[in-house]
Image (cartoon, rainbow, N blue to C red; front, side, top):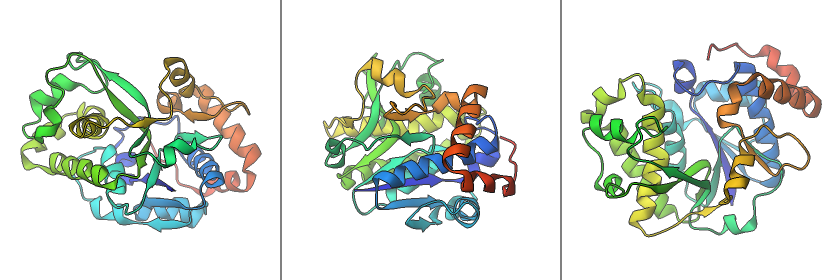
Length: 289
């Protein structure tokens, strides 16, 4: 199985995505995440656009074995749905894969059970569909989005259910993954949903709904449960702490990436472990995130 990573520059320049403490931290994370992944996967593919290639390959020379700029085709897309770049990356795959977010650090290899699974994900997340403050913003989504696939309404009768967190996502069942990608593209690009996607709060809510929520719905329609890396709450909480100790197995920064503590630890770690790459950071443009 190969590993893939993706960078779509449109959300980065929008100022509406989950921010890093600085653009330097974002590039530091790419250095660390890609090098750790390459330790465990002979084939490490990057799906990006022209800007992403100019930074990650042409300037940083990160250890990817294959590079695609397919996401350049979507750089005129009007709406900031940060998960859409990931969805396109999934849809391009013709062999089993695991996609790694670039704030995911594989300190150790993933368990072999994941490499033979139909669908792989990081951990289950509970969804409270009536909670308007929940990151998924389910009530607002269905109130404002005028067209969805029938599959996306599969959880309507439930007050509590689980969907997969996609810090890592992939698997061997490409038919199911392609079905998800097809439905996500239809929803994101449907003209009846254009007004909803212009709403300020929609970047995160729509992104979560059209990735993790919809993936959960598609899997439910197939009566299929993902093979999770973590299922125990205690282990899941440990994942989200910025742990750079030799005893860590897996880290997903998520909300920690805009904290001063994470910034300092990440910068010092990359400077120590990957000094030649860290030196190149001074050559990169500063982006206001």
